[in-house]
Image (cartoon, rainbow, N blue to C red; front, side, top):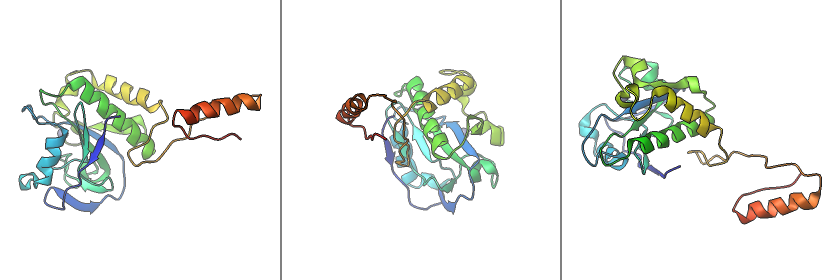
Length: 206
Ligand SMILES: [Zn+2]
């Protein structure tokens, strides 16, 4: 997965500072900002600068090269347009950038990978991945909703396919264990372990 750069913003009108009391899912957005340079980094900088004092924020912004995280994952962000509803209060918000200098397909793939990690991390399932539209009726994520660069269903399928790949560290730094194999000859197991350790993996024989 591409780098997740933590750029947690100060508490402001944009950053609620309110601790989340539950998690029902992940909400997907498109930024709707088609200006050149309106990628993940500049979206984080915008919020860090107070977000023009608007009550608008998101946890992650994703483009084709970078993911920025601006709000702690246990805090409410203002993104779903449903006031005190579950969208704002009980989901993690991901903005997929649409700036012309970012490849939209790669950005969506990166977002799908991030969603897969979050689902694992928080023990959620694919039915808990929501469009912004679900909460407020807004036409968002506007690109995915009209099949750009691929359909919403394709996006969910990508999340599922990334979810079945392991091992890689989740955003929290949590590691998932995977069993590599079973060997009837101990020497063969030891040889495989040596090979894995050589490749930088942790391992053990039991
Ligand atoms: Zn949205």
